[in-house]
Length: 245
Image (cartoon, rainbow, N blue to C red; front, side):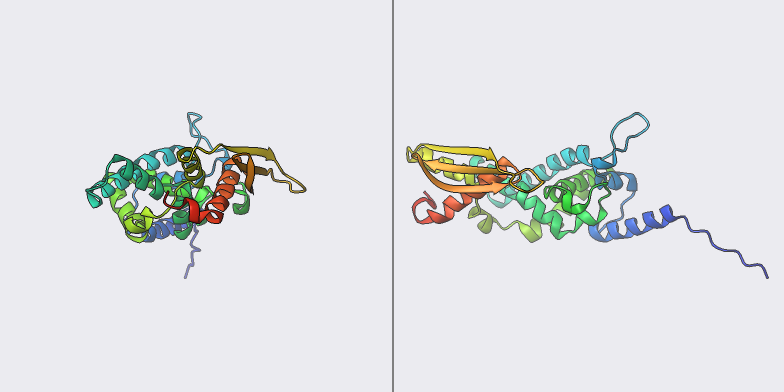
C-alpha cells in the first residue's frame, strides 16, 4: 500500500484560520480576504502593490471613518428627534472620538490581526481605533453599505451608544475649559515644553494658567494628550465651579 504525505500550504492554513476568526467577529462570511488583510497591515511593513501604491490600512481608515460617521449620524437623527444640529454634532463627536474608538478596538481585540514590523507595545494607542475604522472600510469594499451598517449597529451602537450617558460625557476637557474661560472672561494659556527627562521616548509637559496663575500641569507623549490631562485635572479640581456652567 502506498502512503502519500499530505502537503499543507502554511499560507493557505493561515488564510483559513483568518477567515474563520473574521467570520466569527463579523457575523457574516467575508468574501475577498485581501481587503481585510490590508485593513490589518501596518505601514511599517512597507508593502506596495504592482503599481507602487502602499499596502496598509490608512486609506481604508479614511473610508471607514466616513462610513462610521454617516451611520452614527443617521442613528442619532432618528433617536433624538428634538436635538438640534449642535446637539447632534456634539453627540456624534463623542461616539467617534479617538478615545472612544480606541476603547472599541481594544474590546474587539483587533490588534491580534495586525501585521507589522513594530512590537504592539511600541505602536501608538490610536491604532486600536484606526484599525476599527479600516475594518469598516474593508467591509464596505467587500460587502457594501448595508453590511457596514449592520456591523456598526451590532458592534458599536447596541453595546456602546447610550444617549443619556453620552450627554454627560465630555469629549474634550481642553475645549470645555477654554469655553468656560471665555464665557467667564478669564485669560488662559497652555504653555508646552519638551520634557523627556531620562526616557528614550519623547515627552511633553503642559502648564495651564488661568488669569496668570498656574492651575494644572500634564505630561504625555504628545502636546495634545498633555493638554487634555492638564485640562481634566482642572475640571475635577474645580468641578463645583465649572461643571454644567
